[in-house]
Length: 221
Image (cartoon, rainbow, N blue to C red; front, top):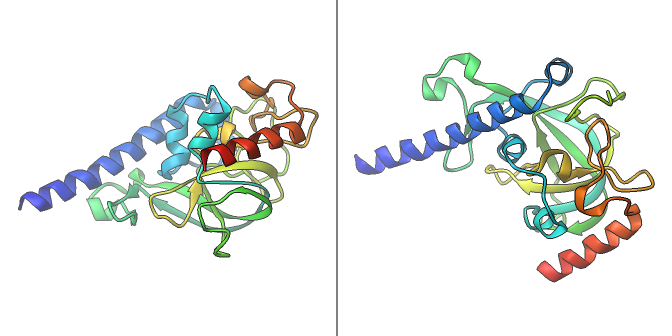
């Protein structure tokens, strides 16, 4: 009896964390973002990222990442709605918890095409597919500079600092736009529409930043 109660509480806690993440995501977005981006989900790291501050140091950024790669967003593998994860990391539906269908939110799973591996938790070495689970996806290649957190689109190229989700099969962004950096310009920037400079690396060229990142990963391993 007590173990069943404890188990139910743990499941409800995971749902509560997911819901808080959703609320944070909505508060962080403008009305234009909400209309332009494709829904919100309970994907653990991606949604909780809105409750997290931008990292103050490179060490903080690296510490929360299980996989770090330079890569492009590949094909969309699937869309699914749920309310969170149970204690085994399985997706929970609204009906599982006797909740209204509106409690579910949509996430997108995308393949990631890897160019360079900087940090690996074993997934890439084992030749397992790298799958990004994200709340937001764009339906056009164009990005509105006014958007705080544009969704991803196949072909987007990033420096991705990915954190493992509770399902142990997909990954998300712990620090939102700061875990999805743009390295195609003169300096490394966040992946917001305005391409805001990374606070602790303003003006640093991509190759210099990647060198710092590789050294930091070696130090933490």
